[in-house]
View 1 (cartoon, rainbow, N blue to C red):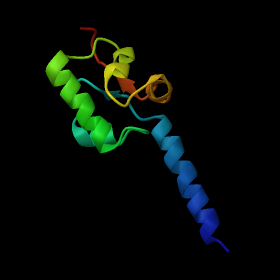
View 2 (view 1 turned 135 degrees about the horizontal axis):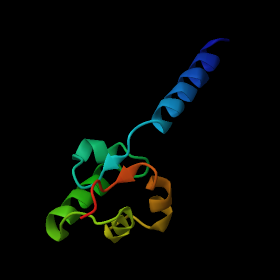
View 3 (view 1 turned 30 degrees about the horizontal axis):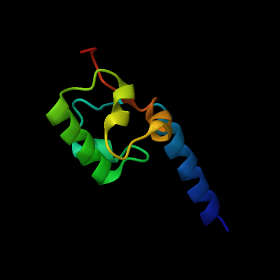
View 4 (view 1 turned 30 degrees about the vertical axis):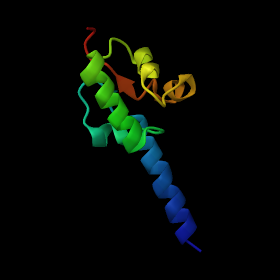
Amino acid sequence: MKFPRIIAALCGMLLAFSAFAAPVNINTADKSSLAALIGIGEAKAEAIIKYREVVGPFKSVDEVVNVKGIGEKLLAKLRDQITVGETY
C-alpha cells in the first residue's frame, strides 16, 4: 500500500524544511507564531506575550524559563527555534 509511504515521505519533508526555518523572535512574535513552536501552544504563547508586556523584552532566550509553564527541558527543545533578536 502506497499511502503510508507517501505520509512518511511528507512527514520527512516537513521535518527537513522546519530544520531550516528562521528562529522565532520571542520579543516580537505574535500569538500564532509562538503557538506553532514545539511544546508551546496557545496558553504558553499567551503567557510569553503577557510576560514581555509586564517585564519588558527578553534579554536572552534563557529568560523564557521565567514564564509560567516553561522549564529547562522545554527551553532545551526550543533553544534553536527562538531568538531575542538584538541584545537589549
